[in-house]
Length: 260
Image 1 (cartoon, rainbow, N blue to C red):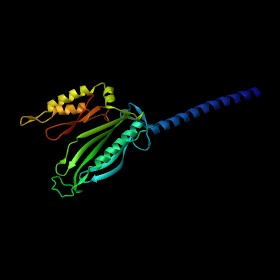
Image 2 (image 1 turned 135 degrees about the vertical axis):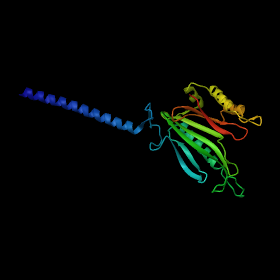
Image 3 (image 1 turned 45 degrees about the vertical axis):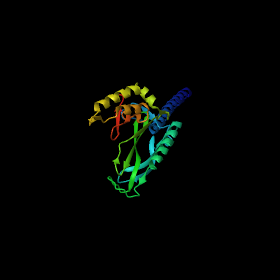
Image 4 (image 1 turned 90 degrees about the vertical axis):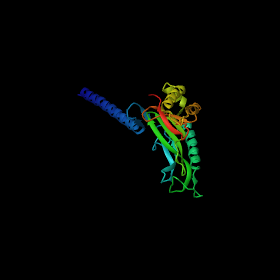
């Protein structure tokens, strides 16, 4: 009988250990799942996993805005400051750079104090001002802030964008990815992209009074100097180049999908 009791006790201890291992493992799996669910997101194609561990503020997006102010309700012009919500020196530097840029643009506001006659009236009495439009693109581990600078004048109305910038970050490291690195990632070069742009400009060239309207050489020259274009990864994972086209009248903004 004593031997039988020892066997029963041994079996009970063995069964208890098995149950403990199963329950413990289940708890660990559940806790791990909860942690992943809290910090991991997937893109729409479920192709990659990105954590928010590099975020400074876990409750906000990777790129968000502060200090939003309506400059002109009638013209739909607002001022706001983008913040790169990543814990890295690159993110801090860009956030500071963009903050100063946004402030300088806001300071271009001039009121029509001399009551000049305006072709394009506005309720706020604005004579002229520059303003910024922003775009945020999220794709897999990449987050991009795109900035387009334009101008309004009550005498001439809205101008086309004449300055563009883009900042692309790796959300897993917080590192900013340069134009050169983006081009290399998509296995191309600026020279190849400019050849495509030149071809597009030649195809779209028009002539008015025997004068070509698009200044092709000036446009390409500016792009070679990296002064009037931005390269970024959009929300579909495409590499896009946004650039300014110089003309005999009003310059305009155009874009090309590089990896097509």
